Image (cartoon, rainbow, N blue to C red; front, side, top):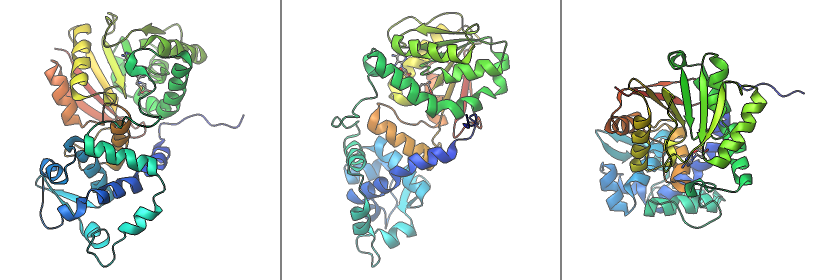
Length: 341
Ligand SMILES: C[S@@+](CC[C@H](N)C(=O)[O-])C[C@H]1O[C@@H](n2cnc3c(N)ncnc32)[C@H](O)[C@@H]1O
């Protein structure tokens, strides 16, 4: 056995897989004529979307990624192409790389999906990865749940170790990990805080898979599972805190508000809600890893990566107060928290 135990920092791994978006993002910008439109004047996201005839919500993600890559800049709320874009990607430029990039980009699949979702504002309905593994139907074959748990275990191991280090769990008695996937967050938080009781909640088939990870981790005395459809069924009472990791990012603003309201209703007064997410900058100027991850959400789910300002608006609309956030040290993740008065 020569495998090493996981650590809190897997950012290099994330940088590697998120780098696959760079060429298609740039080629999508070229396909819609983004740089010439803001070469000689600044435009807001909405005005630029109207000019290019694309969806403003999707465009905001592309601009954030392009900004982090150095091709556009935002000043006093308006976007302009940087000297880098005007030098090397302007159709009238002497050193125009556009045709070269077009020829070098072999990822037709991703490129097509990015362009379609930018134009329509919707997840592309064609292709095999049309939907995120069936959970939008509220039920799935057991082998699909097994795959979700395995996929999410790898994706979430390092950030779970980071989240588990947060001292705030010392103030919680019973934590419910809502949409738990493999249960890696609840398991790691319970391991690090021996006083805690944890309920791992997910759809029936996924909760069943999480139970296997609990047994493997040997924390079954304090960590249980609950099969609950978070949109249609009553939430268990008892937990004084709800934890959602990578759950809000799967859904629209309206659905996130619905989830926040359901959490608020199920929590006791003084109870806490926690959202573990990769956050966009509040002004949507990046960072690249959040914007690229957001484009994955935009083309594969109904959601996106949110900023703290957006989460604050959603949580406060549901009645929560004391919204705050801190980077956990687990990969690129932050822990957003708020309290029911
Ligand atoms: C992106 S995964 C996040 C898993 C885990 N929290 C993590 O970060 O590793 C989203 C999870 O939400 C769950 N989910 C989706 N719809 C649900 C519903 N209606 N009720 C309960 N869980 C749901 C999925 O089954 C999946 O496990």
